Image 1: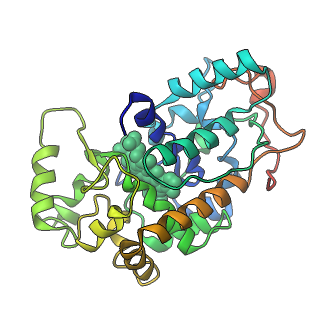
Image 2: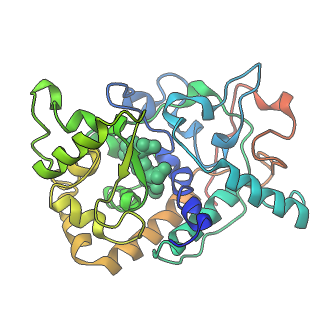
Length: 313
Ligand code: HEM
């Protein structure tokens, strides 16, 4: 990762994650039943790959972007720049949802990951409500996390593969510091974390900086490779959900296999990203192609209660 552009592009991975572009700090996790069953009436599908996260709040209405879990998402300015250039060249042609997807594809390739082709034609959503942000945090178990992915039509293998995106980027201490010194009130670090790593992270997180960050992949934090999985096998995963992938029965085999076979990981990642980027998106005449990714084209339509059901590309 040589340039600011390629580094910034990496961050777009979090947008396309759709499944988890909103994350919740420890102690703040949400009820997964809401996610999978829509018990609140605003089910998980209502927050997804339609660029709703890019919408700015207005005086009347707070958008998804302002929800606590989304506070650490970065890189909006880059999307703005890409959109501006596209609007100048071919007005109203490329949706913000497609921009996110394509920027993610490029970010992955620039970081040394697979170069894959993604279908386009997504439309931007017309709803972005703060109260719809309702997703799992870093302390969920593998099976709880899987409920979320399954609701998107994804398999355990897809989930373990997509979490491999944590081969790049950082996490703030607030998302994992419960593991480093006083895990679940024991006065000791999480026993599934390497002792030296825990001691080191403990020092970093004690810094007077507001909320320091560390690489999610402690070996090669800027490179898109299979080191993340190797680190998990060495008990060097940063967040609880990462580390649990290496202990849970349903995922440990996949982790071991990707740790051994970097090429297989990259191929699987490309396939899983195409799958993720093609489910539950808006197509045809549904939604719109936003002119400014931060604002609905017609604000008055924006806050209608119901969102149109998404379809596959
Ligand atoms: C159960 C599933 C997941 C959970 C609980 C989760 C949670 C998190 C958390 C807590 C962070 C740290 C945020 C921060 O401190 O700012 C993070 C970072 C990140 N996540 Fe995930 N994540 C999940 C799955 C995914 C998936 C599927 C992708 C992409 C396909 C992804 C991509 C990323 C990236 C690229 C970062 C680094 C962002 C940066 O450097 O700013 N995550 N994730």
